[in-house]
Length: 89
Image (tube, rainbow, N blue to C red; front, side, top):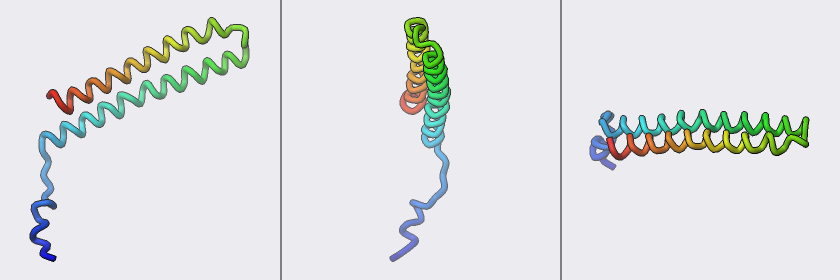
């Protein structure tokens, strides 16, 4: 097998497209990390509160669901930004 035929495939070049896709990946990764940690912490504390006071279910679950929805919206914003970096810009 002739190794010189593989030389063009082994070139180390950094292109603008490659960096753009790496940036989109970082944007989505870090953008999803915050909401994931926030949702986990929020649900953990809500379940802990329900374990201590089961009668307060209505006062705990409604704000918890709203908080989860807002945190999830931030994750969706990160997805939109990552798509815009990868495709639009």
